[in-house]
Image 1 (cartoon, one colour):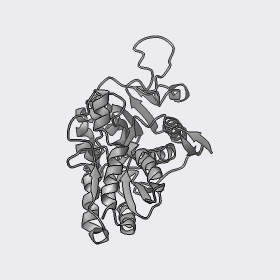
Image 2 (cartoon, rainbow, N blue to C red):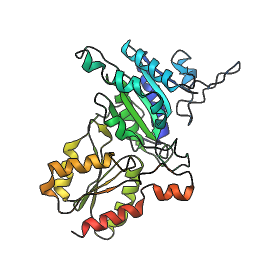
Image 3 (cartoon, rainbow, N blue to C red):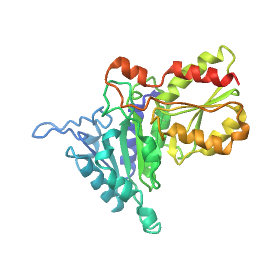
Length: 336
């Protein structure tokens, strides 16, 4: 298998599914060039070039530039999905979901329920999230905890190329609306072995990134890579860290998380979403409720402070959870 980046894996997944199913199409700002006039068609591929070259292969009917209107993008995509198409709508940043949340929150997420299971909305919303690249407060948030809280939405957060490709293909084939979140700092990190052919990864199955016996770390996205680096270092001093990457927050693989904590007896949740009512607190509450008797130490959560993401590089680095925060938490938990 070839070594691929997340950027390459997502592009491959889109190409394979568009070739397999004529009902799949993509839409978003600049995905088909955004040229605004005459000239040679040359898709920009979105803000980070993910969909570049798809226009030439599939044409303007299936690679559709949209106005700069998130409400138009989501409204059109939801309507297309309930009408028999399988749209993949790209919102440049998950921060912009506030502009167009109603079609997703009050329509797409509820159609199956409100119509007795007879209505399907096979919609994928691809969007970027996360801090660390100096994009400031309006382009750096991590909002998957908000999408996770909406019944009827599925929420996916891959941390590597293999997962990104398999989960995106699964999302496109799924008959429910899926919010597919891509951490903007991970697109071009060193890749992992990823098959050329199509494959799927089922939703609700966590990935045991690393086996361990002393402590469980639950992390997603960029935090998985930070946790892996810390675990490597701590192994030199005899601390055995297990890392669980849920991969999907809804559905959530609660069994794997509980199984890991029951084995290790200790839990640290490292998460980039909100410091209040965020995903870390949901996991902590789950374990406290259902595996309290297995705990040897208090649960620790590591999140950013309850402030907007700073634009100052020094402040942003301090705001984002890092290796030092994780080492400190693990050290405190291991003292019990």
